[in-house]
Amino acid sequence: MNKLLHLIDSFLSFLLIFVVLLLLVPVSLQIFSRYTDVIPRYMWTEEMSRFFFVWLIMLGATLGVREKMHFDVDFLPKLSARADRILLRLCQVFMLIFSGVIFYWGIEFTKFGWNQTSELADMPMWWIFIAWPISGFLWIVFLLHHMFSKSVGDESVNQESVV
Image (cartoon, rainbow, N blue to C red):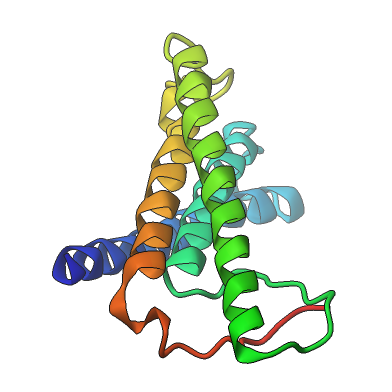
């Protein structure tokens, strides 16, 4: 199981780098067309940059869940190690519920966009919308792995937090 999750993690990292490189193309074309007369102003570049940005966010969030780098807000005072583990579990359960919601409604969102195309690039909208159920599913997989792996008792609860 760990080997499969590592392969998925490696593929997501590669895909994230690829999407960033793809995002550079329409954004660069927008900048050059805006400030020079060398190339015409393309409208599809704005649409494509938004689509790549959606994928960038969803892939980044998925890798954040995999590597336990998602934001964690501390609003309670430092408690005992046992209480911290309980709060961590509670947080993971709520994240799991949220991931299920994203997965379920992401499927509905993809069904909604199945027969639609984007206005300018004439691209099938489900190519963009499918990022939600894929991310939701992978969040569930990664969270369940974190919750049921043997290293849970050994892991430090003192993660960097955003207040």
